Structure formats: structure tokens, C-alpha cells
View 1 (cartoon, rainbow, N blue to C red):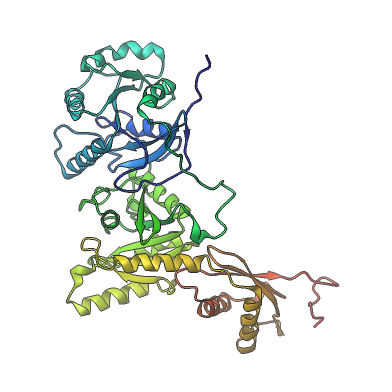
View 2: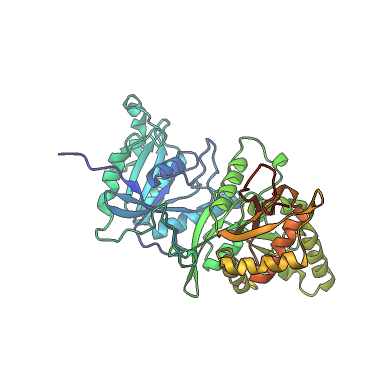
Length: 482
């Protein structure tokens, strides 16, 4: 009888907050036993940061996959501590308990190269008492020659076990053979457009509007998303660097789906050690920006706006993303009008090169301003995807030339022949002209501003490129013969 095919990752779907459509398989164990590596391999893609040191993963991270035709949601989480000492360990344990409560099946991961620790023994007892079906996953056994080293693990008394190597992929067919019977039949798989078949109208994307939330450490990014969810899905502590992975969360408001991506706080590059978990977390945040449609820059109004906020803003503007700026912790400035004015004045100085970005005052803790933030996100995305007819564009350019003609080149006027919008997200225009090299950036900015004012491009960058029109006759001859 032929062996069943290996599982494959499902089209990426986000976890909806409180209850997933599919059976949940939670991956749990003490720190540094290889849970995230196991999760990434089962999910079929790199989602969790993997580093050979404890405490890297802190929040619950969800991923849908297909096990021999049956959909499943895997959950990765931080290492379980029997006796947590600090607020991060206590918070991780709370995340683990929440995952256990919603799990259909638990994969209890241990390091097969060492005897079971007291933490392994106590965790095994805890999981047995939970009543959730359990599979013991004996990890880090890279070859059959190492299997004998795992003999002591069987003292945990768990009969349903499998030996694997998350690093090399050994034993994963056997593991999925054991997972498969716990997954119900007949659940529909999520659908997604083919990679080269984006929705004709990006506003109608059934998979949700992808929004990356970025900012400095401790700005309140996780608190904001927790408020949108209505539950403490993400670990929030008054400790910089609490969030490590970029985490997707599906939020539905007024029949509209938003995929919010919580990201690690971004410090100055010089302050982040090379090859550290924080450096990898920042790289993950940058990828989240690249994949997002809209970026929310979250600022701490109480701490004030800093130069680093402008650098972080550049991550979004350089990549042509729609943008909304949220001033969080605004409730702490309540009643202090002078301080409020100073914060806004400082903000406008810092972001003077993106005056088109909307600013919303919010409090993630109390929920004030959140509805306005969602409204501005939708509005920014709508203009980000806006397309203008060529006839209207050229009517505007005729007016531009009449009231503010382009500069001279060697005493001769630069002629603008034809303009058209060539793409959306962001709105991008190409202007055919006689001498593009003579167009000064100040004139380019003037054209961008006229486009923005005329067609309402708020919350999105507008790109304008001046291109040489194909010339006739001898090289160097003006298109008009002048």
C-alpha cells in the first residue's frame, strides 16, 4: 500500500481571535525544546522565529495547514514554566493555558537527547489532568542512532509518542499519521486567489485588509490589537521587546475584515545587537510592512515624538504604503491642552515630508478613537487603490502647465506631452515630456500636490515619473522642432 502524501500548507488565512474554524493542535513544552521549529515545519512556512536560546516565542502564533486532506490550525507558544518568576514567564503561561483551553489535541514536545527534567514531569501531569488528547513528540533525534538516547523519556508514562527531528524533518509523516485521526472530516478548506490572480478590486479582497502596526518599543501595539479583539490574545507588558514575532490577527468590524499584524518594537539599528533575536524580530517587522496594504505608525503621546519615529515612518513611505498615524495614550494628556498642542507640533515637524498622512488620537487601553482609526485605515486604502481616467489626468496637466509651467532647459521650455496613471497601490503616474532631466524635485512635488488636491489622494503616497518621449528625426532634436 502506498504511503499517503505529505501534508501541505493551506493558503494563508488569519486566526480570527477567539475561535478558529478548524480543530486546534497546540504545541507545548518547556523552553528551548524546538517547538517553533516543529511549528514552522508543520505549517509549511517560516512563521515563528527560531533561535537556540529560551524565551524567543512569547505570544500565541497560529497557522492553518492540511494533514492528508483535513484542515487543522497549529498553535505555537512560549515555553511553559512550572514555576514562573518574572512577568514575561507568567504572561507566557497564561497564553499557554488559553491555548490548552481551545485545543483539540496537544503536541507535548521534549528534548530526546536529555533525561526528562522535573519541569517535563510536572508539565506531563498538568496536561494529563487537562483531559485534552496528548501526543508526546520526542524532538532533536536527528538519526535512528540517537533513538536509544531517548529511553529515559518513556518514564513520563505517555503511551502515544513519536520520535522526530524538527531541524531535519525526520519522523514527520509518522507524526501526521498520529494527528490525522483527531481531525474531523468534511471541513471546507480556506480559499485564496492564485498568486497571480489578485482581486480585480483590492477593496473586495475576501481575505481582509492587511494592516501592519509598527512603532518604537512600548508604544502599545499589542494593547491596540487586544482591544480590537476584545481579549488578551497578545502578551502586553511594560517591558520593551515583549513582542518578537510578527503576528497576524483577524478583526471584523461592520462586516469588514482587517488583518492586523502586530510587530516588534523597532529601536535604532546601532542599539540592536547583531545576530540577536531582536534583530530577527525587526527583520520580521520589515517583512510585515512589505506585505501590508496599510501601515499604522503607533506613537506614544505620553513619551513624545522622537527622531526614531521618523526613521520607522520611512519603512512605510519608502515602500509606497498607505499610512495612518495613531497617537496612543492620548488619555494621559487629557486636560493638558498645552501639552497636547506641543505633541502635535512636534509630530508635524518630524513628519513634515508626509503631510498627507492622517493623525488620529487614540487610547488602546480605554478604546477611545479606535472607530475613527478604523475609518481612516479604510479611507487611506480606498485612495491607495483609486484610479483616475486618463482624460481627467490630462485636463489637470493642461491646467498645471497653464498656471505653473515647467522650468526652462538651456533657455527652452520643457514640454509636457501626455500623462496617465499606470498603476495603483500606490497611485503612480507617468508624464511624457521633452527633457525629464530638467524637472526639479520641487516641480515634481508641486505636481504630486496638485494630483492629491484634485483627486483626493489622502493617506497614500503619490508617485510621479517624468519620462522621455520617443523623439523623431535627428538625435537631440526637440519633438516640436524648436
